[in-house]
Length: 252
Image (cartoon, rainbow, N blue to C red; front, side, top):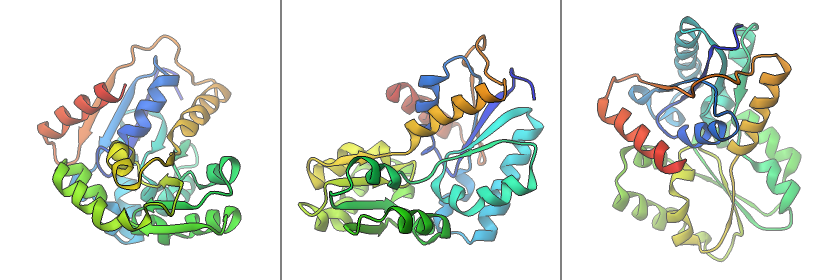
């Protein structure tokens, strides 16, 4: 692998931007290629085999573009396809996001916790093994069907209505909120409006640190790159690209 190669980052939409921004903070000189699979969004409603095939197609695209490492910036894709991809592409290194439930165990174990994630993530074997290992026995699991889609579309009124109807019942009951989908950090303030002052747990900052460590370990760290970011959308939507760079600029 060439240290000048790009870092490939993909998600079912633009939610993975919340992962990319954390990576850029610690790796500003790397060049990036971001793939938004809006054509097949949301992954949480698809079968395991469909998710594996969709991820496989994106990985092939990244390999053709000489990406040196691939970040799976979608919790559903990570939980359903990361093992499959690692077995199929043993020469490629994959860094996969996962819900930050262990962080609750490490930093706020005694506090009641709400895990917000897609139905696919909550039902996955990978997440349930994580829950079994670190369960604080004060945890509510909420499959947020359709929420990632609403965030992707950006309709603020719909998002607020959805949150009031689906998480309003947890106000006063929880102190921790695990954001188990990479779209959800984009609406932290809206969640706070419904639940009040809560502690958010998001796996992206730790993933970014881990990615840097792996690149150093493999001698793939690029200290002289330009920080160029390429965007690819499976529907080839210019509007999606404009929105991506607008949000990225705001987040950084």
